[in-house]
Image (cartoon, rainbow, N blue to C red; front, side):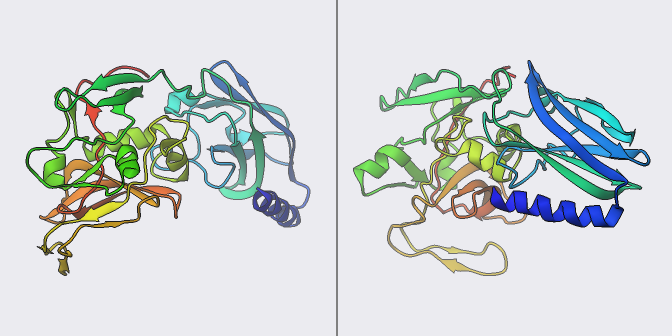
Length: 328
């Protein structure tokens, strides 16, 4: 947080020298009003300027990108082109951009431009977001897998209904891995190769496509830091992505994905447990005939990514309900 304030101070000093006294902003604040956020500022300028509004939900480390295009679009009031001096108000509709706010660490950024050239930035911190804009976690429901009697928790997120625990079903056929520790098995479930993962979910549930995962990640800001913090264990989304790592095939296998080969070891090998979480999607790779798409959660980079891996790798599985609900 100190880096942000220092950056703002240095940039403000630099910009004051650059533009002289023709542009300044003061009396900034933000307040929630039901389902909107109101941004207040006082603008002093010699000629009209363009004003853009941005938002970050990780304390200012990053600002919204991906589906939620910067600057914010669902805004009205004193924003956009030809804004003159005076006391100003911007009204933002978060739900109009399908944006869910955490209850703390929300930072707004006002950008002031002259002839499309950014001249001044102003940051506004807001730490008291309340319902209905905060994603209050819905009550978890439970599902009993009739195949083995295990119980899983699930919840709606947007128009998806998702399990919030990793699948741990042991199939009669296919390739899967069980952790050697009972505690790890209890927490992380099982790992499956892609072919097995496609058919391992119980009736009424399925392995989600890459596009369904994109719907999920977009709901919390896209595949960036803000999405990661919402979706991991103890994140405010309730999805609770776990860092179960990944496993390699139990017998030797040579993959020809890409322009090189890789030989898997002949014994079970688990990697990055507690550091990364790999989740299969049902989507094939468009570039590689023996690849499939997965979703990665990385503690080291604090990011979420969608990538391609060898189908024989062992990844975690989250099942999504077959019927799409309307919870938005």
